[in-house]
Length: 193
Image (cartoon, rainbow, N blue to C red; front, side, top):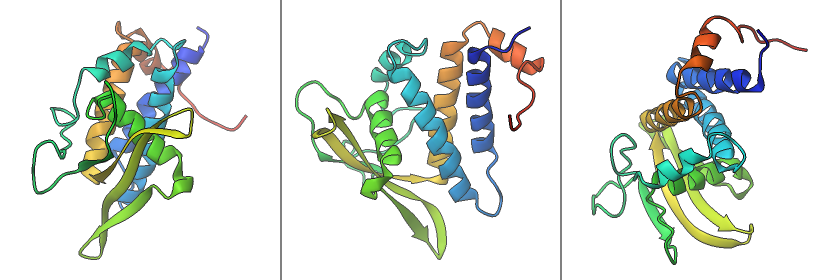
């Protein structure tokens, strides 16, 4: 059996999720950010591509909201004292930054465009416990549609990343054939070419 691009992509997303689920013990929060960032950027890049088979997942994520289970991100809509996500620049029109899709796109943008210093560490009792990330979504790279600030602890990055991975893998492989073939060793090794 030939290894297809689909097999390799499925295996990469699956392995990134496994890395996210088992971070390095010494640098666990930093390692979690690294795995989470790559997994988030990889998946969001694909679901935004109208020609990728996962594109329909973007519509499904538009109907989910970040303060609902399983995302569980407290927001400024709830009037809690502890909000993990707060809007800074409110959108006009029908854009809802509280939808899982818009939030994840904004989060991906904050992580992928680090040149704006969008990510800062969060410390507690002399320990790194998470990261504060400035999110935004732009039109044509210069018009900000909305922006916000989100504080993610390690457990938040793991929960969001693993759920997004599950949704993506299920969406691109609803029958489970890529998973079965990966388990049979179709994409069993990595190495330098």
